[in-house]
Image (cartoon, rainbow, N blue to C red; front, top):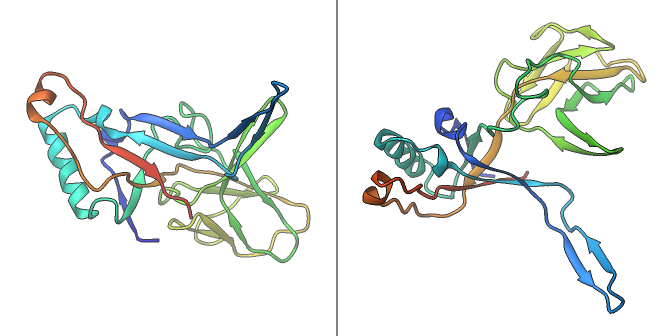
Length: 210
C-alpha cells in the first residue's frame, strides 16, 4: 500500500465531521421478514475535513498536503476527533486500557487492538498507526520499560516484547493513534467566494485498510 507516514494538519482534523461506517446487505422476504448479512468483517471510517477549514491559510495548507500526496495516490495519517485513544477521549492512556493478547510462552510480537463493547457484544479493531512514543505496555499488570522490555513499530502497530510472556499472562497497552486514510477523490473543488460567504468546502477522506 502506497503510504506516507505524515499527519494531516491536526487543527483541521479535530474539527472535521465523520465516523465509522458499515455495509449491511438487507433482503426483504415475501413474509415481511428480513435477512441481514454483512460482507465486511469490520468497519471503515469516512470523514469530511472541510468542516475543519476556518481560514484561507487552512485552505492553502490542505492544497499543499493534497498535492504532496498526489491526490488519492498516497495514504496518510489522520487524527479522528472522536476516536484516537485507547481510552475515552477525555482521559489519559493507561497501560491497562486494552487487552491486546495473552501470552503462550513463545510469541513475542502482538498487534495493538482496541475493543468496542456494548450490550454483551464487541468488536475488535486492529490499530495500525500508533503515535510515536505514546504506547505504554504492561505484562501481567507490571509496567514495562520502553526500549528495554518492548518496542513498537509505529507503521504497523506491532508490539515486540523482549521476553515471551508466560502462558495465560495478559499483555495490555495504552496509546494514542491515528487512522490511515486517503483523499477519496483526485480533485479538490474549493470556491473562494462561497467559502468567504460561509460555505463549507468538501474535502472527503476515507480509511484505507491493510
